[in-house]
Length: 402
Image 1 (cartoon, helix red, strand yellow):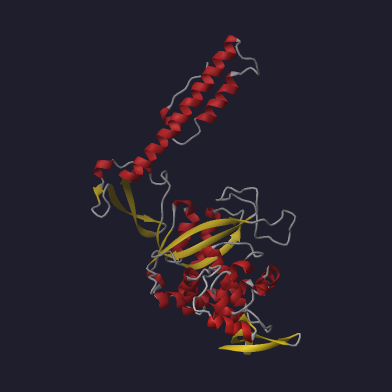
Image 2: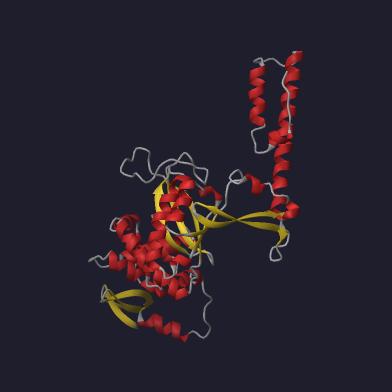
C-alpha cells in the first residue's frame, strides 16, 4: 500500500513516499522515496516541462519472473519449508534454495555476490527482503539445516507435481552422469564426498563430486538424482544407481514398468545388465564393438535404409541376453562416418608429421649435425609406439625400426 509520511528532522518537516507490505505477518516499509519539504514539492508541481531522467535502474525481470512462476506452480518453496521449517523471521530455507537455483540458471555467482545479484533483479521488489539477508554466512547457515534425508523427501514430493503439472511423458527416460569440481581443500577430512577423479572439466587437480541424473526425453527435465564420490567411475556406479533410482521411480510414477531407460555405452557392464534383468527394466544402451563382433561386421549393403533418418541404415537382430529377449540393432550413419573420417584423417596427418620429424631428427643425429643423447633401437621403438597409440592408427601405418 502506498502513502506519504512526514518525518521531523532537526525541527523541520520532510515528506517521503513509501510503500508498505506485510512481511511474516508484520507491516514493513519495503520501498521509500524522499520528496523533500512542502515548498520543494510545490515547486516541482508548478514546473510545466518535466525534466529528463538522469539515470535508469535496470532490473533482471523476464527470465527471473518466468523461473519464479514455474517454482510457484509446483509449490517448490512450500514443499522445501514443509520438510525444513525454521522459526526465525526473514527468508525461509525455501527462499534461499530457490534464489540459489535461479541464480545458477541465469548468472552463476559466488555466495558472497549473490545478495548483490538479488538486489538487481525483480525478486527484490517481489519478496521485499533487503539484500543484506542473503549474505554468504546466512546462506551457509540455511544450507546446514538441510539434511540428505530432507533432500530425498523433497525430491519424492516434487516428482509427481512436475509430472502431473507439466504433462511430462515418462515412457522414455534418459540416464547420464557428470561431475563438478570444487575448491574444497585437500586437508579437509570432514568431506568424504568430494574426491579426486577423472574430471569432465579437465580439472583433475581439484576434488570433485559426481552427479547421476534421470531425466525425461522431452525437454530433458531432471526427475531423479543421486550424488556420489568423485573418484567412482561411471561403470562402477551404474549397477548401484540402476537399483536405487529405478526402485525410487517405480514408487513415484504410475506405469513405471512401461518405462524404457536410455543410457550410453560408457555404462555398459555385465553386472549392470543383470540389474536390468532382475528389476525387469526396459532399456536401450550401446554395446562395445567387441561384444558381438559377428553382428558388428555385418556388411553395410545388408543394412536397410531408414526413411525417417536419411543417410542411416540399420538391421535388427533378435537375441537373448541376460535371460531377456532383446533386439540388437546394428546401424550405419553417413554423417557420423564422415565426422569420424575427418577426425581420423586429422589424427593420421599429425602422426605422419611426428614420424617424419622423428626420422629427420635421427638422420641429423647420425650425420653428427646435432649433438645430444643418443637414441637406441629400444628408445626409438618406444617413441614410435607412443606416436601410433591413437585409435586405428596402427592398422593403417606400418613402421620398421632398424
